Length: 453
View 1 (spheres, rainbow, N blue to C red):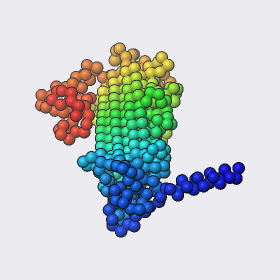
View 2 (view 1 turned 30 degrees about the vertical axis):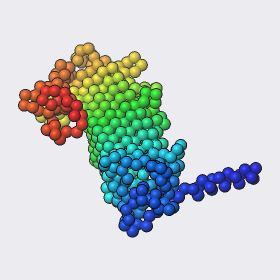
View 3 (view 1 turned 90 degrees about the horizontal axis):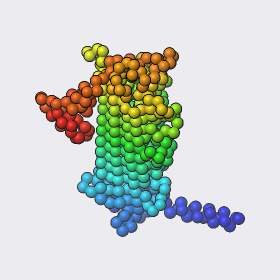
């Protein structure tokens, strides 16, 4: 027995001594994986055309790190490169791949801690992640994140309270936890645009694919968030403010969110604008009482203000559910000149569970304006629309939903295919927009034609 125990200790010791902790001197040198592999004891070796990282390599403040273009870097178990220095992580001409070495399961990848903004471009992170533990933030463009092993709360981790992040034209797929996430007490402004999120949170925990803490400004636009129908715990987009801080502004627009446990959920104090999204088939919660909404709005502080317009909400267990919140405006058409004017233009179809249709469930004491919308009924009149809305009419303790006048189905179809003699540019819901040259990726009506930009 003693011999076996000694053998185990020796084995563990031998495994530990093989991994290297290496820190640069901080005297102004420039490092890369190629340069590190030429240094004995750096923890980076070159095996054929592949660079192997074994240990924790720290590039100190005062030095500089430049990513090599077009190479493959493999990380052993627990291996990590920590960048405390300014860095250039842009593979301009040829993509660089960071991945695991063999069957390594706990490798980390890059941990950016620089005091200056880092530019990250054209890198594939496979089984490893990118941690933004930086007070300055990062700009991440044209990168791919796949199979992240879940050793952080997101394949792309947003850290550094107050640090701003831009994520543009990136792809996230089959990550164990969230594609993008951070700590609940980190308020990181983020702009996420033109990205695809496919079947992330594979561990099937109660973690959405985008798991964000609300900050001064979070914008998610023109993204696709597609879930895995075999997972019953994974939502699409979740934005939370657990501390009740004010002045949090959230915008979600032009996205397709489908096949998740739920589509969008907002929790806590924030101003929310959700427009021109396709929120479809988010119904893979096994118990409808626990989720399955296309959009779920929740705020026990009664301060969340929400504006919803131009969304298609289809085949979810619940269309929209409201719990608490301060002011929810889904359509206010009675005063065209008022500050609360909202054309509505939300379209509901086939939302329901247990044999009952639920387009809107007002589980709050608020009066909700929901005018100008198209409901999942044959006739858009008061009698029929009542059948798909749950509110004061059904339970006197709840707030009332003011849904008349409803929208005109033919009118909305015309808005979405509006001819424009003057060559105007419109969103898919008919909102006039500036010149198409300034528009992000999305679907627009330009010169009377539907255009995918």
